[in-house]
Image (cartoon, rainbow, N blue to C red; front, side):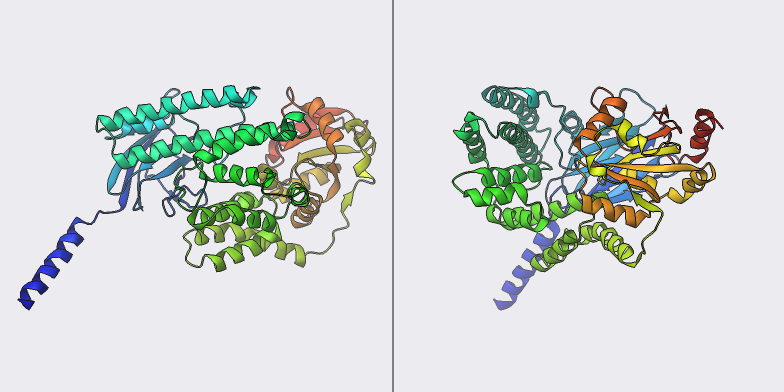
Length: 495
């Protein structure tokens, strides 16, 4: 009898092991057209779409590639061909997928094949998750009637969900697929609606409507539908935006804050402060995900190189010693550590100079007068601007050209989103020899008016100015394109 029980237990264990679902996900693909050096893709971390968890694969000589990853739940991933194409897949454990990128096609850049191709193609018609940012071009953001926005959003949401529901009813997609697609569409529209309400709240901060808390009531009604509690499902790429808006709502809710705390909320830009605020309203896996994503979004591309992010990262590792996010954050934090180490080891360069009383310069013409008699290469940049910093990394390539032509470099850093401390740190880190100023609001507005395109302005921007203060080239080449820049210098100046 005892032997029979042992045999029965062994059989049950064996059957359980055999029936256990394989969590491997295989993606086979092909690129036609110009074959890229690599294809990047996100990897699910605890089932979440985490932008920092990226890997890459090199396609073969004819464009074929294969990606293998693991996830024990349905998850979102994104495939990227840098600067050319992106595709989102809702993947499930133990499933294979086929993706074709057609880079030489004007109409169909990529095609998804297989059983779920219709549903996946449909999903890619929606706004794609790209670093947790909602598109500012969404027409609903311009709608002035909030009740109208809610109605329109509900119609759009139900229309999209119903398309997935029909496919589930026809057994084209699984219940896991449908549940995650439905969740994602709900989160996207909740994130969009709460962002619209937040924008309206901020723009009407002194209005009677805000004083009567009408906007806060709408916000509260929205969050009552899906409050980010401990059981909050964080697999949608829009989870972070929704949680951020939830924290934002609670910080402005008169029932949860006194006036002193509201002042701190508006004035304190500390990373630690913001995470401590998040801890008041989020718990469990939702807080862990938000915490990690906050560090990611603020350290990505060395956004502000804040030392505080290093301390926050170390604290995160202590609070979540087994977190799957930590390894991915390490690669993002290391450049910030290196940044501060280099600054500490560097000495002051006398060729780095600051325009006298730069805070009081309100017009571009006024600024250029300070350079009269000099040929000037103007570099307009921002501390947050990744392409700007990429150019600085190659300054040795073009600085000799400018010196050989006796051309002074004038660096104008926009001061709307660039902090003075970070600005000076970056000048020192990149050893930017030349004249510097941090532009105030009026100066930036004047520059955008003079050189922008109907109010839009792309960074970095380069200008050539002659000895008389005339702009002889308002669209000079990136300095790393040294040969082209030298040609423009020779053509635009009188020698």
